[in-house]
Image (tube, rainbow, N blue to C red; front, side, top):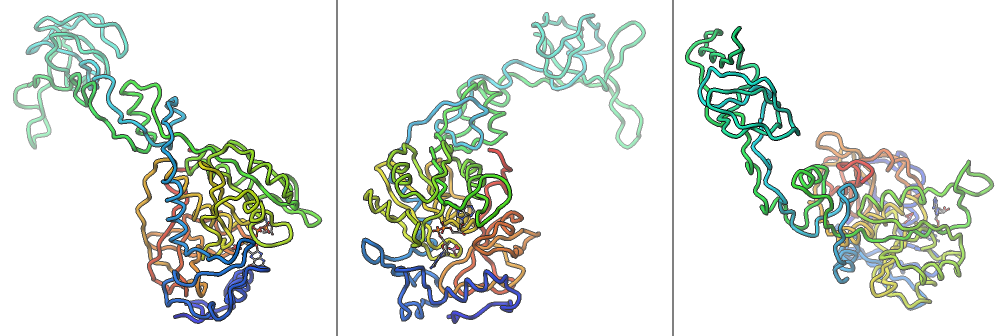
Amino acid sequence: MTSPGARVGQDADELDVEEALALVKDHRRSAGPGRGRDDAAARTPAPGTGLAAHTARSEPGGPHEATPWPGARATAERAARSLPRRAPVSVPLDAALGLVTAAPLTALTDLPSFDTSAMDGWAVAGPGPWDVREEGVLAGHAKPEPLTDGEAVRIATGARVPREATAVLRSEHGHIDDKGRLHAALPEAPGAGRPGGTPTVVHGQDIRPRGQECRSGDLLLPAGALVTPAVLGLAAAAGYDTLAVVPRARVEVLVLGDELLTKGLPQEGLIRDALGPMLPPWLRALGADVVAVRRLGDDAKALHKAITGSGADLIVTTGGTAAGPVDHVHPTLSRIGARLLVDGVEVRPGHPMLLARTKENQHLVGLPGNPLAAVSGLLTLAEPLLRVLAGRAAPEPYRLPVRDGVHGHPYDTRLIPVTLHGDQAVPLRYNGPAMLRGIAAADALAVVPPGGAHPGQELELLDLPWTFTGVGT
Ligand SMILES: Nc1nc2c(c(=O)[nH]1)N[C@H]1C(S)=C(S)[C@@H](COP(=O)(O)OP(=O)(O)OC[C@H]3O[C@@H](n4cnc5c(N)ncnc54)[C@H](O)[C@@H]3O)O[C@H]1N2
Ligand code: MOO
């Protein structure tokens, strides 16, 4: 068991000040007015598991427990699985990128759909030498006349091979004599560096026969495949203009806080809204369709109206999750009779995050206002929920050794931004709950167990959605 003040592999002096203060203060697990865990319970976590020390909080509806981090993710997944399956939609190819196929992709045509030349050269009929026809054959042009035995015609890669052609001779393997007849070049004698032997043209060489890749009706990909750029290419080649996909979940973002500016420099106690610009593209990368971003200030009435009037599959709120005087999320959820599925998570940053069922087919993820805490809530609750709604498979969990020691929270999991160098994860500084400087430079978030990690310890990593797929899906 690690004592609350313990640090692994790093002096307290080296810690970011905000982070160090947060962890020292946190060891008593006070979670805000009316939300403190009693100290006796706080001092007896289960060694090393991070799963045992639930935080009792007194809420208007009575005391309840914070959810361990892995359990919170599982609950978010389950919440999405419990919903009725949404009907597939048919979308143009370019709108399908990043979505998941809702039906098997079967070939609508043979591929290739006609016998085609694999090379630039001559289509030839029978053994050479050949008389060369005047007019050549180009890709996409009219159907060529059939060849007769002993005849050749200039042909481009991708052009239709004339009927009765027996092979294609590459341009570099043939030459035309002064009488205009085509001869196959002699193959190079082995090791001699000069031509030798008899010129041979193998029947069917460099012709791609119709149906070589697939026949019409062949299964190309099963339902449930992620639509990648390569899948878009295959679908187009196989004759598709639209794809049947699992629809994007409709998400509405409600940004709370009177202190937020949407442009210019922070001034007079007002700060720039960092979440309004950050969340929509992030949610889209997670497979969502962000239908609205609304800035509501700290207005309980407006929040109530926005939640009850929303037809989205998921509402994401930012800020107002704690128990401060203008933190309206809990009271509003309680007022509308929402069911809290997760109310606080044993994770830092982001412990006040929550997940609620607001209507039969609607959930709400409450992200804390501190920007890195909001990222933590996004990856802990919104990612699993949206992944299941999008029909995407869970990523294979992976672990890498961490280069430097990471101090831990005594009871809670920590998520810290890291860069990946070779086979190591390198923790980044500026990982305090209010900071985005670390995550903006990060490749992933490392999952630090309660008590921390020593240098070389393998940690689970959560990829950021753009690490492998780029931005803009
Ligand atoms: N007495 C206690 N107070 C707080 C505790 C605690 O345990 N006891 N926990 C702190 C933690 S941890 C977090 S996280 C926050 C969560 O609070 P809220 O979700 O209610 O968020 P706000 O109070 O509205 O804002 C917190 C912080 O973040 C800034 N903020 C809010 N929205 C944005 C935005 N869109 N862009 C940039 N920054 C934003 C806001 O100005 C505050 O500075 O509660 C702590 N309090
Ligand atoms: O530690 Mo809070 O949950 O900033 O994020």
